Picture 1: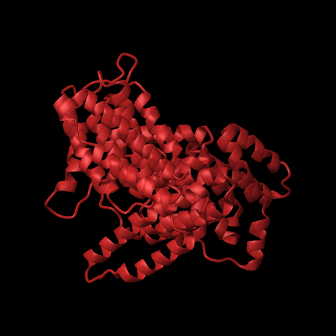
Picture 2: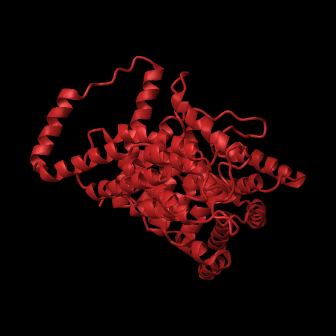
Picture 3: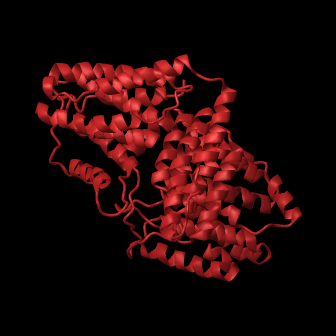
Length: 513
């Protein structure tokens, strides 16, 4: 079965959830700013000016938020159904039709809009689009259960609309007949797989035309086509194996290929870009806490395709991969992200339109400890061997699941147990640095700064910074990141400027990165 039961179940739950304890359907939001923003976005598909298309992921998120929290509105449900098809193909369309069927079947008397003619117009907006989609040369291979379920939804909607709207009901019968006939024909005359392969090969050779690229506009259009074509493939790969390296690599590459410069921003580093909706972030947090890491990966990748600068989401992907013990996939993500940051320095401090940072303090800590290490120049075989064998690095890596599951205190206790085995001042210094790095990863920048200040003072007093400049640079980089993440008081700004000057002295390249 190819269609996603998870997707249909999720949107059925959305249809069943009341907007409040007092009212299942909420209030009429027709004249709200959220509703009008949806109308404007959807109007882009009918615009005569330019090639702008609706941001379908944005439409999905805003429609879902309205239906869940504000109003059970059939117009919004129709828009969500079509947007889900644009984002998730036929599994999305099936989920949307299931939601629409439930509202019409169980809550017709209370949902919005109240006027039957307005409801009919909303359904009339969807029907010709369904006709166009289902008139295409569909492949029923391995998707028969999906289309049979879709046929059931359409049949029931046809009955309900005829019952409630009488002569005003849009006609679904032609669509149903066409889909039913084609399902029957495909079941009777499925050719052998070898014949299908031959037909596809010949058809590809005869019909495929190489796109002509004569301008930057053509190149951009072709790249967008590649992105849209690749997303269903990546999603399919991930449904088979959530940690498939091909899906992660292809999705990240195609998304970030379009980023050639820093986004425009004001003096406060605020850009006009939007991050994911708050209710979506809350749901992601809940699913992660419930241990639904594989399913969450699919949703995160869909959001990152539309919000490529949402670095908190990228870190959440990394955490899911870590929970699934996908070490190779984690490294793949780190390297791709490191290449982006190296190509566009100054990206991490930027913010979305509402002031939310691209990367919160916890994500910055992850960047400093896990991503930034890929910036570093190759080291000698001996030092590489030493780094690989360092017990404090191994312990920090192993304590991350404890941090995620049991919290910061438990992770500190675990790391301090290893610290007790340290012999010599150098080893104890590295273990204390590991505790500071753990504090950064846990988002405890204030605590990390105290530890790093002591370590920095120790390096200066002992003169070790002259003999181990790499260690001094690591401490200063972490210290600079903490100062950058903390509230900008006068003392913090002064300390940050001092650390910056000393970093320039030790390693100018590290400062530029």
